[in-house]
Length: 362
Image 1 (cartoon, rainbow, N blue to C red):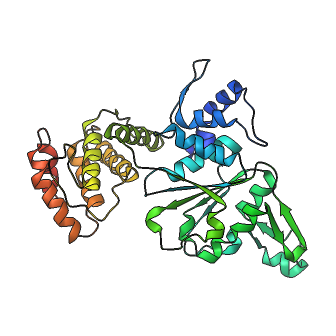
Image 2: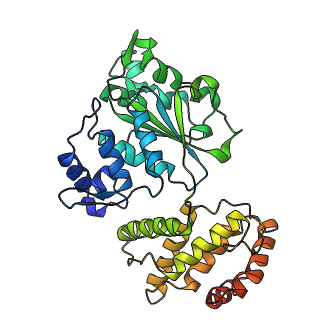
Image 3: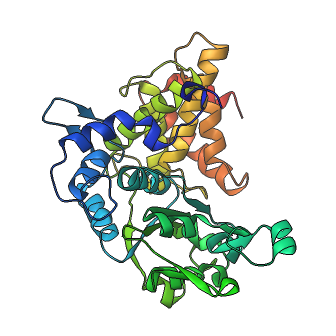
């Protein structure tokens, strides 16, 4: 394996190891069984702040502290946690950092898809050993849920509602009985204290594979909203772009950069269907125009500026990304975008360069 510096995206517990160590050293509050930090310290790690020794903790989640307190308090009980929200509301990001702070390991992960099978949530078999030796502990291949139960750790299930409903229900026994039967071995794995599950779901997937009432009862749900204000969203975009840019060897960008503000303003106005001053109603495109997409647009623009420009992010660097994010359906979204461009962007002071850059792409 190469050095940590060569890894494109270190896991949260690696990237923020120094912060986690500093918080642990200052944390004198009671910790639930097998937790690396107390609930108060976990929230401090997520929300950010300054420790008594002057160590600055970078915010991992920019939003209401109470939401993180509810999420952490849930994980300290026997209830699992479901993070629900539209795409781009940091569900996966929060899930990873919760697992890193609580268990020191965010890698016990199941990615939900239409092809996810029950074995992915429970256990499978090494078929070569199974055929040679028959059912045995050595032939069993544990799932991330199985290993989390053994270790007393947090397991993560991404995009829970993308899985078929019968596969989802494989979680019911683990969450209610805190055990996983292995009938082939006439045994079970009983969860060690500290075990819990964080699941995420996109609320635009409702109706795809809705959770059964039996499974939903095993979760406490925390809805993560989109950022409340433009300034909050700008801060999130700038922070994540700089974190991603560091791994990609791109220059840092100031939170006050005009192009970040433009991208966020365009996305928020089209998402809300009205300009920020409330003066003009707008057609709403079919895409989500989430914070995550704004981060992607700015990061791609910064890459363009670095490798094909003078290193300074400009309107020309972000124009194509904005257009690609907004116009997903050429018919409906194209009309919405052109109306916005002519009625809003063309009339806005200081946005002439962005207007010309967008017009050049038509």
